[in-house]
Image 1 (cartoon, rainbow, N blue to C red):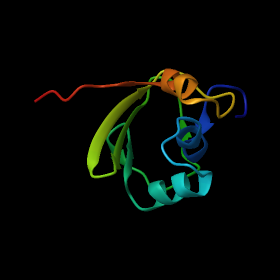
Image 2: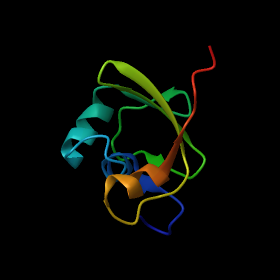
Image 3: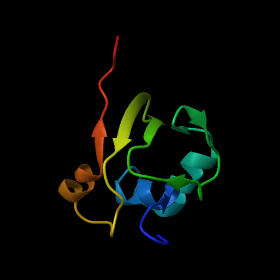
Image 4: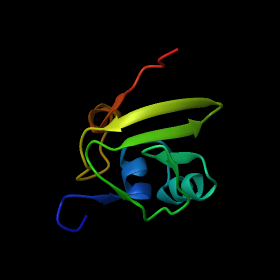
Length: 91
């Protein structure tokens, strides 16, 4: 984090426990499995801010999350769950 207003996408995904290793999160982004505010993104260094919406294609399902907080560290699963809120399927 620089001034606390944004965080690298791969770091945020790792702290949110999407994958076990940060390199795996970076590969997920580079592979096109993540959208940031509906825009395809392939740069692991993309900036994530509070309020952004992430669409993730992970483990054969699509998840849509709103970023609630930036991560100070990679903590336990209960702490990671506080970083985002799931947006339910509208259909």
